[in-house]
Image (cartoon, rainbow, N blue to C red):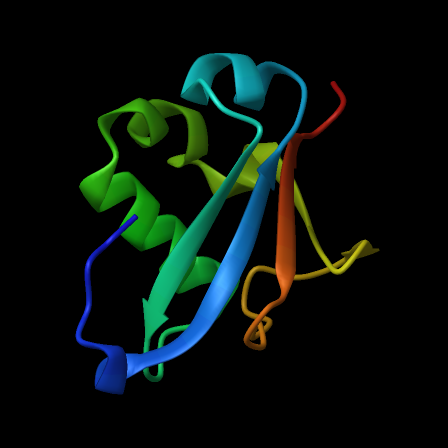
Amino acid sequence: MMLLDKRKIQAMINLLYFMKLADTIGCMHEELAMPKGQSNIYNILIILNKYRIDCRLTLADASKLRMSINKKLVDISLAVMDGGEIAFFPKAR
């Protein structure tokens, strides 16, 4: 998890990884502190790919992922509220 000044944190986001993603990343769940103005899925993927080596190849191509916020399939640009849950899972071939 990134360390940020609490005044700059907009949201604490719960991340869930499923299937092959969980195996590759090495966990099924983690929490991420998002800075103000950056709490959408696109920015979360950028942060994960920048700071977590194990995410770089796994989450680098969003076209190969399905994402949900609070158990509803969503687009990559959708914002996530504080305490929200994002699930990442690979698209079926």
